[in-house]
Length: 184
View 1 (cartoon, rainbow, N blue to C red):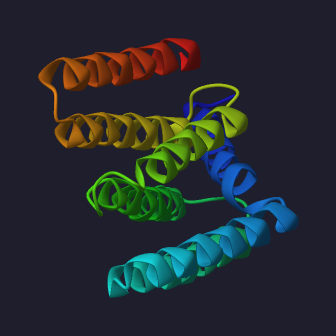
View 2: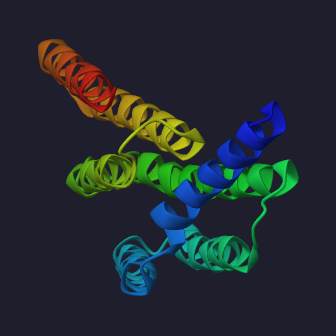
């Protein structure tokens, strides 16, 4: 086998990881969209913040485009197509993570549990789809870590007592380190 054959197999394999992780199961894809629309709509009703509607509609539109992109590519996959998958995965992950972090700032902390649930969702998505490291895995791991850090800091800033804030921050950082070690 030539070097180019190895590169070709790697590119095809890496692209397949995005396809399997984000667009393979039709029921999971539509359930994900339905959950986002439901939670976003309920957040909008609860907070009256237009940002919630923009977020959930934007997520679904980005996800529709991303999943369609993944499903419409045919082998052999080019580097450009792989970069497109990486961009789409990063964009959808960042869009979701941004709202999780934004929710930590809403109100007096009554939505922190919802934000934590979103962070757990990112971690579960990461773990359930990546049996070994791939570009998809690295992108999802980075999204989970950044979201976890943001959630930990956001929750800490909501604490009135310094010691409670310190405990929250150390606990959150501990969970993030544990997640990274377990994922590796």
